[in-house]
Image (tube, rainbow, N blue to C red; front, side, top):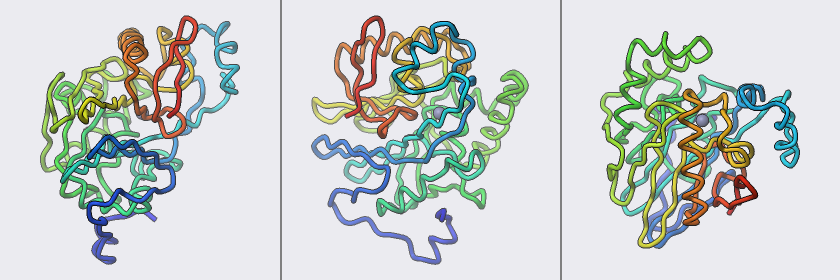
Length: 304
Ligand SMILES: [Zn+2]
């Protein structure tokens, strides 16, 4: 069942349990940093032809790189979709809104994951977007085309918002992604309001934005600070647990500007491996929570 405004009214919603930690639910992993709780909730998974990611890569080396991951370069991929939820004081912040029901049948499970965790969508205070792709954005509206998180302030990087609301994008983005552009424009227009921010902004107390472009033009990642501790919400700038780590410099078909995305990914992995920062990746395995380790000439994802 998907929660909608009407079913919530019918059932009276689900109350949060005081100041206690949120109950654990299916597909959920949590990071506790003092008074800050960061959860990874599952929105389900995508189903993609492997070629969508691997197509532009050096095919002669690809099979060897993929061998440890039991992936078929000609087969299908089922990347998980991990939504980050931050809870601190009165803030209940979602990073991305998931797919909703209009993208792929295997995705759009966030309302169920929230319900299982005892979280009322009406209690979400902020929805902060990494970028405007369907699996991150389309869940902002419910099945009645009303804001799914009706009391939340919605926030997006200014460059990313300008790109997806530009009427020219639907033609400039290319045929394969034209529906992404139309879908984003329609959904963003349905929001009564959106707060825009720039690279480096402290978007919320202890949450700072970092421009990580290439996957999309204005893709943002976020660092959540809690005292001396921190966790990076990556979105899709490191977009999978296999080739993105093993061969970060390779072009990936999932990135809109493949060269820029490779540059962003390579620089970020170098930094994350050096400082040991904890990460949450939207399409990384094992709930996406872990860290980056050096591995030969590349890197590997180490789940928490
Ligand atoms: Zn994605």
